[in-house]
Amino acid sequence: MCCPDRKRLLSQAGLTLVELVVTIVVTAIIAAGVALFIQRPVEGYIDAARRAGLTDEADTALRRITRDLRTALPNSIRVDGTGKFVEFIETTDGGRYRAEPDSGGAGDILDFTAADTSFDVIGPAPTLATGNQIVVYNLNSTGTTSNAYAGDNRTTLSSTAAPPVAITSKLFPESSPARRFHVVSGPVTYGCTGGQLIRYWGYGYNNPQVAPPAGGSSAVLAGNVDVANCSFVYTAGSISERTGTVSIVLVLTRGGGAGTPEVVRLFQQAQVSNAP
Image (cartoon, rainbow, N blue to C red; front, side, top):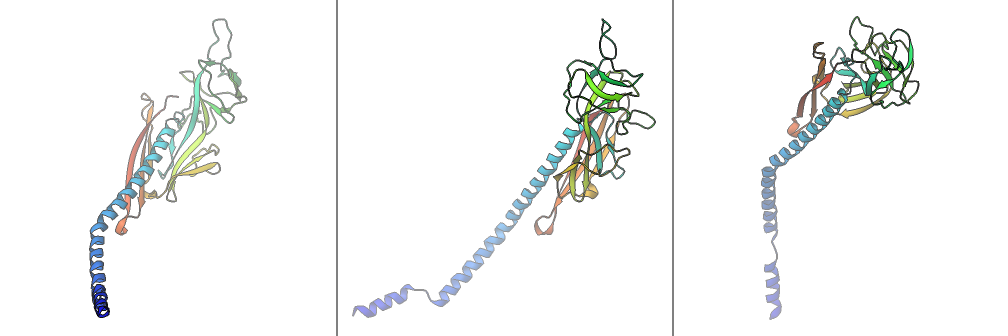
């Protein structure tokens, strides 16, 4: 008597095929509804994260450019005709040279009447490294003979020990009213090209400007650059102010949700000293 009841109970405990199909359909409908409900927030989060990444990349690049520009040799900043490349000569140190003998008639002055090979430093001795050069009174303007790119007022070190500062024999064309000299490591270029923002260094001096420069080293600071909208503008300022301004526009773009690209546009200005 027990066996029929047991079979009946077991058959009632299972699911019929119809019930199983209905369960699957209902589950699919609920899942589709949940997916539609969370799709937009998820896409919004992904877009926001992508936009934040672009902003951080662009901001980091602009900070690097601004920091480098503040080390520029006075009057050495120049922008090529396309506005996509900015170049400057990087300084590492500087100081004031001796222009007159001391009270006892001693001291190694920097001579501007004949080629000289060394001079004393008034104040702390500069830090010198192999490959550094000395520049005096850079004007870098049309009609002058004090253009560091052309080598008019630039010479190499013959020793990294100082004082005195030992240089390759040089007759500098003009003395500095402030008796100032600069130690430079070489030219540096930032440029927007090929969808990237690139830093170039370690190449030779070019006069006139070559963009992008040949030789040396390079490193990518940012990708996804909208080159058409990237620009550098240099305003030298008046002679009395002795300051210049570099305006930088950097636009980065990357594909966003639903085929809409994310675009980040940053603008920054850097003030530079032009007192030679």
